[in-house]
Image (cartoon, rainbow, N blue to C red; front, side, top):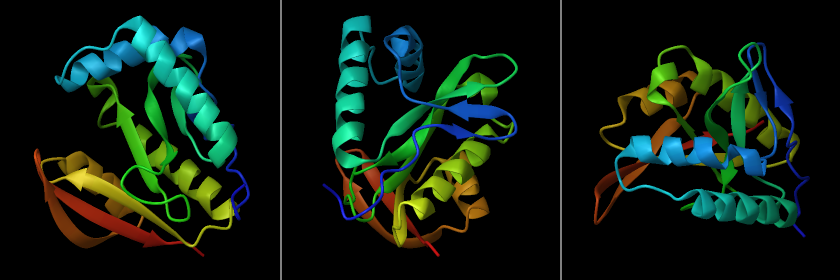
Length: 167
């Protein structure tokens, strides 16, 4: 097991609730993936992603969590920690929200809750990797005091690596 406490898988903010995935989130996850424009996910594939994510969370102590608005109780995206391009000791913070809810501060609000959850695990640093075109993500990370560290390139272009020291 990890040298770190598991992150809380139940986070609440003024407007949002983040909690573990349910199989009933599969269709909404398909819709979110479809909005990316890089191919469609079947409901079965989404269910498999959810099952794998739950298993990974149980073993690693970190997770991406679905975001629901409190009042509407609707799935609007996800936010959380993952190994991604980083490590279990210094994971990445990640988020993705439906375009229809962009510009309302939900990503920042969810990410701030995840940042607090990461601090509570005893970790000392988080990463985030963002494509150069993703201005909105840079704004969110700036509000959370992430700083640019370096840039790498893969077959899809440049990736900016940002980091944030934790107290």
